[in-house]
Length: 139
Image 1 (cartoon, one colour):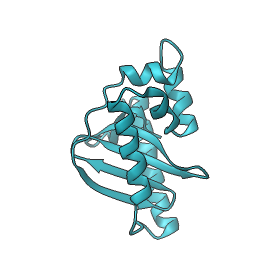
Image 2 (cartoon, rainbow, N blue to C red):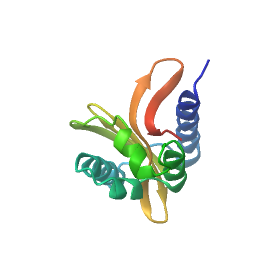
Image 3 (cartoon, helix red, strand yellow):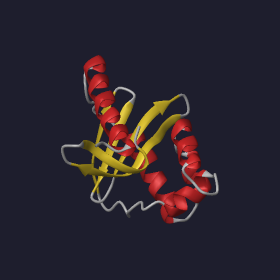
Image 4 (cartoon, rainbow, N blue to C red):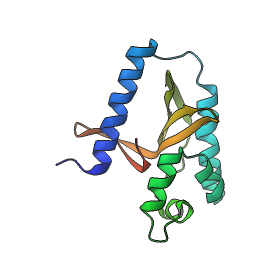
């Protein structure tokens, strides 16, 4: 049985694939997506949960707050098991979605009018059931 997190990971995988088909696949430059993922990890490492929450896509921020006992994004991020990312390995951008792969984390992002925003973080590969399981978001 797939968990809600597994279904979210699967939906993102399908979204990225459909974006690839519609936009012609990976863009050569994912610098801004990479910078947003790195900023999220810096804020998490510095315990600046307000700044980290501001980097989440609005639906991801709302979902994160709903899953908190205290009802806030910040309190849920404090409890999330987001690993230190380690070294940057790669960035792949497919139209308006991207993922940034680090040694110990994968961060998914979506582009909006305000720039790149995190839609999933603390994501690890999950074999056959779903592409990734994410501590935060995953859509």
